[in-house]
Image 1 (tube, helix red, strand yellow):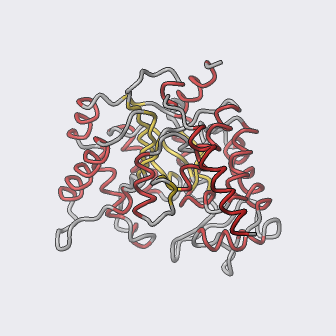
Image 2 (cartoon, rainbow, N blue to C red):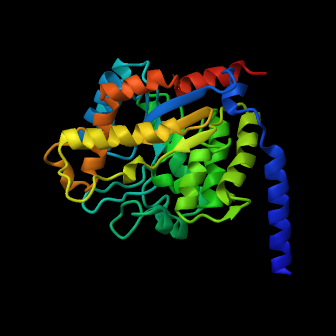
Image 3 (cartoon, one colour):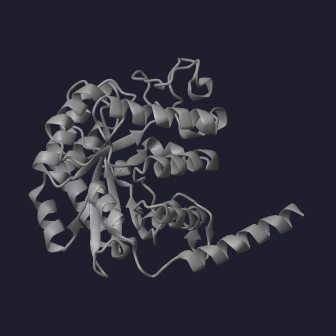
Length: 341
């Protein structure tokens, strides 16, 4: 009986997914031309540390990056919000944070442990990974924390242009995805949701061992269905998502100098972006101007510094122009969606 129901559910999903996938990209729906490749070059983790803030600002002001999201639970948020107030044109959203992954550098939920005990570990900080979050937190607790992070931003005078998810934690469970989508619609704040062809994302998921139906990851088919609902509720939807650069490393034995990091990261970005299909794609990176103290927070300093160096590389800027990419922001996506009947 259970097997029969599973087969029936998959059949419905396949049918609905195939029927709901338009040939027209969301970029076209938003007013760009057929064949246009539209990019958001997006920096995660602003507010996490002073080095994160400095790297983000340098990538925005000196580099090609044009969007950012802020971790409202972290200690260096006030400094970055001050920068946003002084630079109101910056496209800045919320990196909704439900996990605290580092060994000695931790943060907790804004709502506190008494209000949401399922969000915290034995140290009183958020869980270290999305598996533990999924096992311990309820959808209502996650909703409470999302609201708190949005409201804190607004109390500080920072109106987010979009919402996304730190470590993809909000995509780890249907109960969390439901809250994420519902709150985006309620607040009318665009949410990071790749509901289009998701070509780059599909490759990433397949490489990670995702199950597929007709060579399309199940997660992508489900996202396409959710994307239609999000679009119909007045919010923009992404065609694709590129989020693999965090794992790019220098070859064994190559010293992590600025020159080597920049060359490696720039070349990898150019190789991957050249393969992007038409539509609106969000490219995720972590630009950090690492000081001697950053390695006390995380071992990811080389990757993060490499992202900053790549965004500031003249070769990368030339590549974006030569390839005919169109840069956009979440603010522009919302403005374009508002103008579509």
